[in-house]
Length: 350
Image 1 (tube, rainbow, N blue to C red):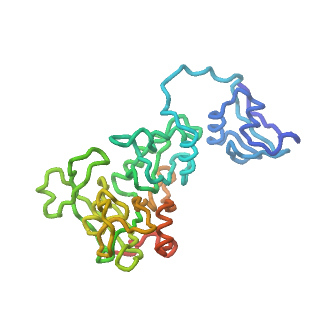
Image 2: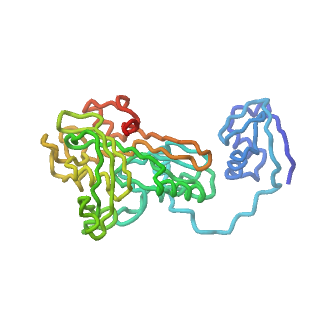
Image 3: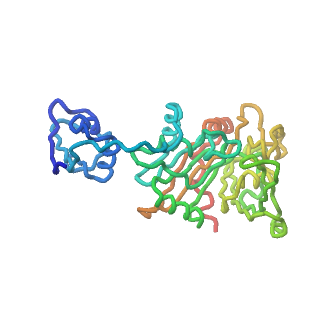
């Protein structure tokens, strides 16, 4: 084991990544070891913290902590950390990273990609792609909540078991705040309100294929399997009486809650073939989940923002995800502009 060293970058060694420079000088160092030394602050340049991709310059002084004389013996073969991820899927899921630090990774989940495997979901899902999101950590990040397959937007993963437990508890105790954006058929009246219909599994399907049935609040206790569900909604803009842009906040987190609630209100989410009728075109009467014309038939539901208390720093973090392509095109066609509405339209409501 060597002692602490300070090495000056040579005149012919500048303008290259720190990790590549280190591997040339210390062949026993692997990428994971370099990631850890940077993350823990043991590697420094001119006294400052660095990342593996930091580019070094001639004349800089690099602090090297004590290093082993040889590379560690290769570990015995063990089961893979997860399924193999293709190059295309690796690029896709890494491009979806919205924000990350040493504890949490946030994705802007693409529509059509399931959060987890299950009945009818196939073997391509976020949980199966997390080996591409390790970024030098020894373990795969863990999902702490989920979004429906066809819903896009902010999705959190924890990089350690400790953070996974903390975030899971935050979701259970409802200290997180999720705001969804949706295009819906017609214009809800009143333009701001709360939906309190319970939900019960309707049968005839499994997993995400199972349709939820709305139950009037007065009948929830008498309906076997029914669970209470609450959604706040607010109309942000409208296209006459034909369609509107709504913000939705799920106070509870039931399966298909937002989709079933908006349909029960008489204003299904655009593109929702399950709850709005795949063949029903909106003729201006407030019903029908297809607007026709140039409007995509994909589901128009997006987890726009998520706020939570960081388990380590305790700071309130708010993450915002850009609209997916099909919704962005709809917003452009209908003349709706993201910057024209408040981040949280419910903030000043008592």
